[in-house]
Length: 102
Length: 197
Image (cartoon, rainbow over all chains, first blue to last red; front, side):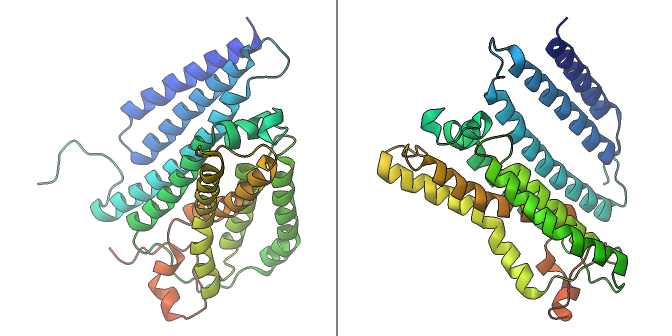
């Protein structure tokens, strides 16, 4: 088993943990954290695939994509947290509840 | 690699071969900042507490090095891992330090910040359109000037990214704060407004 395969597998596991937590927890901050964990899994997987070239230099395209992805993930997280703050202000709770308010 | 104008392959991919990605990425950052502005109406109020003198001293020592490191990372992006996003993140760390230390931003600074937020995307679009005039294709740089153009875009993007990341951390528009307006050019700072519900 090569080291990049190990990284790719860890990435897949992280994605799984993230998606599981995203569905299981109702607290919005936990959902945002779960999304970030899942995103990190995807980034790890992409970086692992960059090592599949024959030469000593890894493929720069996945690296650039991950770099872009990290920035987008950061801004999306900030926006999500701001929205969560707003939901907390308006409804008094940061959880998604089963019963819709009438 | 020779036609890209830079020696670092990741920078070449980001700003030359896949320039669209990066252009839209800066757009996403700007949109997120605007979204945060509109989602949280007035999260920042004037902090009455004076900043700790130790923190101010530390900042005085650290900030020049943060700016230096940011500039270095921006410049080295042409040859080695580095570039606009990394440099912007380092500068944003400085901005976050400033805001946590409750250093007052005056009105001029908040005005400048809102201009600086857009300058990265604006420069990128202007360069892209200019290259379209010259070469016929969007974002296809002339080979001889590619390195310079990339550096110009990256420098403008660094400023925008630093400001936007800082604002995303603070979580709101400094100008939206009612207290900051009342207090003239005193300041905004990160104390959350919990009283208005």
